[in-house]
Structure formats: structure tokens, C-alpha cells
Image (cartoon, rainbow, N blue to C red):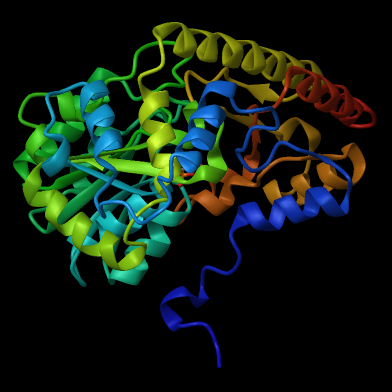
Length: 383
Ligand SMILES: Cc1ncc(COP(=O)(O)O)c(C=O)c1O
């Protein structure tokens, strides 16, 4: 009895591993991206009310009518809620349902690294051939020639994540325009992972579906967990034209059938929250980012301030460790702070070895404590 071959090379998720290391070392966990502060009262009250109102049975498989309506209403382009929106158990399921529902064994799929770790596992389950394009350190911008070379007429799909985990980059209009041009030329689908669309702290996020002729080939994926600090609710969704929605729903009905009904009802209410909520959300994250980035700099890391997401990649080379894993073990044991070694997000390049990923979806006091603990890194390494 052993794990199926298609998954045996993946092992345990890096987030589970390092959350365990955090507990074992009694360390501050800046590894996995989940808030350590309370979700807003209005969303909690809406969920409690939905349960009391007996919204407790299976919902429509593709999503509760109230939620698909709210998603369509708040999406950047005109969307038919019943034919173009599919609600899933978190974006992790949207990724799985999209890949399993649309990609055939042997299809070519382009993945940009560093990547969210579920992409490759789902592509392996679908039997896809993966083509990797690297966002090279230290700028993490798309290399035009490498992207052009990765495309061919066999390309079925490209997965594009912006704002980007783990680099914190928000892809520019030029980069998105290039992806769009190549996707159109090679008749490829774009899976646009925009789970951090509301976490743009510097610059502008452009949903790729809004570019000319892109709506018909783009699946836009968003998540409730990030923007309302409810990652454990696992509510995500895909917005896609009907011919792509059909495949996504076909897989979704057999993966989970539907997401938790009362949480969908609460999500519908939350999405229609006043603009002030979203403004203060980004203002609070800007403060958290700045506390962490300044603290990392003062501890001796080389670090660029992220434009979006709640992650920062810090270059640990000034401290003289062999690689990211050795550095992260030292951090957990000696500084009592956990970060994620980013080589887990790479399949081709070894550029991740010089970095550590920290999450700043934590209270300002937690971040200040972490930063204070990191100051000891300076001792003995001459930075
Ligand atoms: C880039 C990216 N995509 C997808 C997800 C999954 O989101 P969810 O929690 O909604 O499954 C995450 C979560 O961290 C992520 O960072």
C-alpha cells in the first residue's frame, strides 16, 4: 500500500512541514499565509445568521445564487452569474477543478516559477506536460524571450499569478500584454490566479481578462479568505466564459459538489461591503509590510518592498548559509522565527536558494517581536 506514483514525488506540503517546525521550536510563524488576527465582525455575524436562517443544506453546485450574483456584480467586466461563475472550496479547488476539467493528458501547460505549490501537483494528476518559465532574481520580471520560446501551438494553458506569491510583484501592463499576445496567437487558455487582487499596496493590478480579446480565453480565480481574513472558510471562485466554465463545473461537481452553504451566504454579503472596508484593509497591510521590510533591512537582509500580496522574499546571503533550507532551520532554532524556504516553489532554477519567504498577515506586535528576534542574526556574521 503506497502513495500513487503521480503524487509520490510531492511529499508533504511545505506549509505543513514548516508550521510543524514552528510549533516544535516555539517560534513565531511567519511561514504559512494565514492571519493571526480576528476576522471582521460583519462577516462572522453574517455566517452565524445564515446558519440560524437554516442555510444549511447543499447549495447549487456551481454556487449559491446570492454569492454568484455578488461575484458578478463586483467583477471588473460584465459577467453572467449563472453561466460564468463557479464557486469552489477555496481557490485551491478552483485550480484543481480548472486543470482536471480542461487539461488532457499530454497537453502542454506553461507555469511561471516561483509558483503556488498546488499547480504542479494538479498538472501531474492531469498528466500534463509542464513548461517552466522563471521570474529571475532579483527583479522577478518576465523575460520576453524566454516566454516567447515557451509557447508553441501545442500550448493549452498558461498559469499566471498576479499579485504574485511569493515575490510580491504585481505584473505590469507590458508583461500582461505580452502574455495576452502570445495566448491569443497560440490559442491558449489563461488561468489567472488573482487571489491577492485586493492586496495591491503599490502600483495597479490589471486583471488580464480585461485586456482586449482576453475574456473569452481567461479563467479568473479569486479567494474570499485573503480579503476577509477567513482563510479557513475555503471559499474561492472562477469567473470564465461558458465554454470554459463547463469543464470547471464538470470536475467541481465530482471533487466537492459545493462549498459550505452558510459561508457562501456570508461571502455574498461581505463582497458588497462598503469601499471603506477595502481601503482600511490595504492601509493596515501597508503598515504591516513596512514594519516587516524595515525590520528585515535593519537585521541585515537584502530586501525589496513587495508591491502586493502579504509576502516578502528576503535575500539571506549576507548571513553565509549554504541554502534556504539550512537558513530556515537556523532561523527556527536560533531566532525562534519561521519562514518558508522558497526552493519549494521552483522546479527548474535554483535561484530560490538565496531567499526566505516571510508572511506579514500577522498583527503588528507579532511582526515587531519577530523583527526583534531577527536582530540577533547580525551577531557573529559581520553584517
Ligand atoms: C497564489 C495562490 N493561489 C491560490 C491560493 C489558494 O487559496 P485558497 O486558500 O482560497 O485555497 C493561495 C493561498 O495561499 C495562493 O497564494
